[in-house]
Every structure is written in structure tokens, then in C-alpha cells.
Length: 285
Image 1 (cartoon, rainbow, N blue to C red):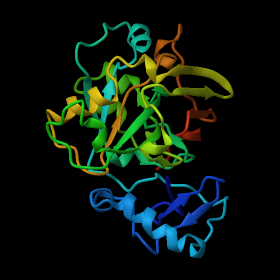
Image 2: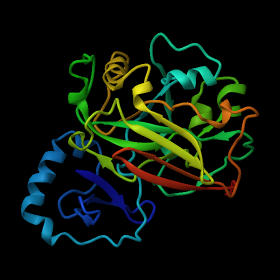
Image 3: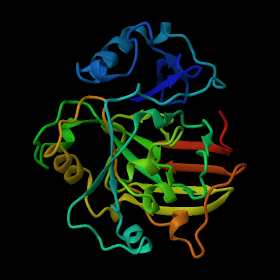
């Protein structure tokens, strides 16, 4: 199943994208894709409801804006330096255990919304990432049980301001949490749609030129390891997002480095998780 949310910003409704690409409105069944939905077997109940009600669901106009495919979660946990080649291009040793940081949930936008350069930014960068959505509360879970706590997967552009992240004092969160820095979607794919999350091609283009083209098989820590590890330090709630890191090819790693400018267009995708596209715009109040 592919879960979508559609409509104007702040007024999104829940929907489903069918196998033929048609999008339907399921707001007659569920108010939103949030912690309450994911934590109460919402996917299973929605599937049962659709068996009898799919034909009566309104069709969503294909030109309608897509929002983030889930409502704002309690947290976004990110994994840094989780691809061997990305650690190398960053000039850092591969970590001995997952590097964790947070991204503010206020950074979340729809998959095709604009990326706004933050005030004073000179080093805003791109990062295509596979993100995991938690479906069942996870605390001290084992690697063997980790995937039982995953309800789906989603495409994420972990936009980063490198000066804020690396050159300013404090934690990475400052360079990761600016408004519009977390485009999610176009949809959440349930696990039955993704054969092996640890073997998916992912790519990103800047103004039509391929910058990132890799595979999650280059993970240093796979999905099971990441979910289990994070759950040793915090409780993961239904709807929480884990972003699993980016492969090589970010602007920081180029020689000379290259960063986003107003007018640029970023396009990215992951096998089985669709494509998103963001226009880069200057800071505005």
C-alpha cells in the first residue's frame, strides 16, 4: 500500500495511491496518518475498509499538491556517515556505531514543495536518503525484531546547511532543521512493497545532472541495526521517522565544494519509493 496526503499546506487529507497511479481520498475512514493511526493497526484496518469502500472513495485530481505522507511525528532521528563512500568523501573515519542526530519536525514539507535557503546561508547541500517510518512502539528491540516495528519507507531529502552544521559551535541539528529542510514523499510504501530495504538504488540530480547514484547495500549499518541501536537510547513512537543516511555525491564532498543556489532544481528518487522534485528559492519572510 502507498499512503499519501494531499491538499494545501496545513489542510492535507489522507489518501492512498493505487497500483495504477490513481489517488483516492480515504478521509471518510481516517482523519490523518499520525501516531494514533500507526499505533492502532491503522494500515491493516484501512486495507480491510478499502475492500468494501474503495469504489466510493473520491478520486484525487492528479494536479493536487502532495503534502508529507504523514502528519508531523514526535521526532525525526537521523543517522550520519552511514555509507562507506560518503564517510570517505567527508574525510571522516567510518563510525564504530551509528552517529545519531535530530532534525526538527518543523522542517517537514511535501515532496515537491520548494527548498527555501535559510537567512544567511552560503552552504546549503542536498542528501537523498531512505527514511523508515515506525509503526509500533520500539524500546530496547533486538535486530531480529527490528523490522516488526517498521510500518513503511519513504523518500527523504535531508537538506543540510554545512556552515551551520560544521563550522558553527554546537550540534549538527542547527544545520539540519531549517524550514523546508525535510521534503518527504511522494508516498509511504508499506513493507510488502519493498522487497529488501537494504538493497535499493537511490539517486539525486541537480539541474538535470546526476550527483548521487548509489545503493543502500553500501550501508555501514543496515535498517535492522539502526532501528535496534536507536531504541537502546530512546523510545521510538508510531509515526516517528528514522532517516538512514546519504550516499556519496553531496556538494560538500566535491572539489571544489558546490552548494545550492536560488533557481536550482533538485530531483531525487529511490527504487520503489517514487520521485520528488524541489525548486530552490531565496529566503523570504
